Length: 316
Length: 209
Image 1 (tube, chains in turn green, orange):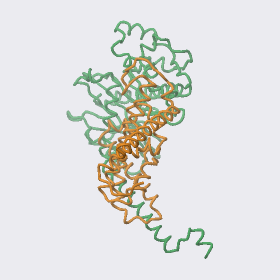
Image 2: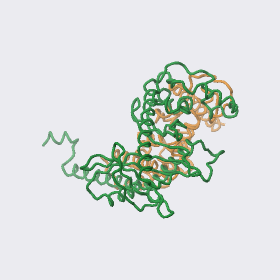
Image 3: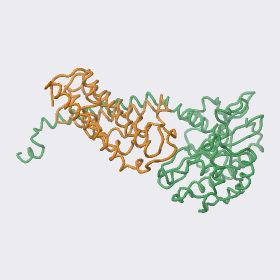
Image 4: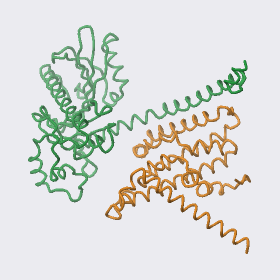
């Protein structure tokens, strides 16, 4: 008894009991407040994230506040799902299709070799399809509870005058420490229109430089053939090339259109120049983008063939 | 230390000058040294601390009679953590622009010594109004300290102010490194001490005459 008392600093059992209860209540109250605020702000946070993504997307397509996007630019979103059933693994493309003069989401199921499996009407308008839970509910509704449906990614197709102008695809791959999240904009021929690093945890000043213009803009304008064999060189970046890449930083003293075009042609086929002291991060981005673009081009070709062969009236 | 009741303005000025968290109490030195490399960093961290300090002081002063004395420190930490989380979430949801700039600083605040110290020394013994003004004073004092440090270090280290190039060259690059934070804090402490000594001498002189 004496020993126990010394151990608990002279507390009686009753006191310990009281402290435990008080601490538990304090923790519960704190947890309740934090949880309540989290629930209350969840919706606004989601909206902000969506706006953020939208802004990055428009920026990648080459529009900004001094040069706003034209009003007839249409953005169509395709959600890709992986569907595992007894018959095997299929890809489900949830995309807007014209039905009676209105665009509605339909689910197009294709197997991994690009063969047609099935097509389901979802009856979702595009505003409603923005919410992940609503999408999932709609899919479960048409497919039944059997297959396991998991979300893969969201691809945006920008179109103007009934013609495709660009694809914007998200991606993530391991960097030096944690995953690097990117968004890549592609021209219809799958050459790169722009690269944006949306989130990363590389070391500031070293791997963190991947978000700087002189690195990410090196990907701009690379042709699809080039991307397939994209490699990283340790050769230093030429001063003239660096100036060409840092369009935002130079601002007023920017190069003229003619100079830009000639420099762009000159450096178009070069390898990606690694950031000094951050070869792993540079390699990670180059290889990640390479794989991302290659896989997407493959999937898009399959999807396009299926759409053409089966006369699906896709809006894009 | 005088324990006589103070007016609210005295409480406010106390935190700003006599007991300035950085220059007189030398508390929360890690952020003061590590993050005060530019004016804007100092300003943002200062604003974040001001909010957390005021909210936590008020909360503790309201619930001081219900806190079991043996678990008061865990309760303070919980209170601070709750307010930090709430501010973090609210900023992320409603002021995304500010969150982009301040997000990383807000989460750091849970571990700041100055806030816990003010709760233990002041807020758990005084009423709501006094705690509010004490929190304001300490928060603004911290803000003032961080901004001053940031201004000195940015000017000397990078030759700029608020990101705008002022001098056109970098006088002492060394000042953006963490070690220079200690030098700057030391110099500021010296100035504070010097001013205090002089004002004390004047007071004494005035009384004699």
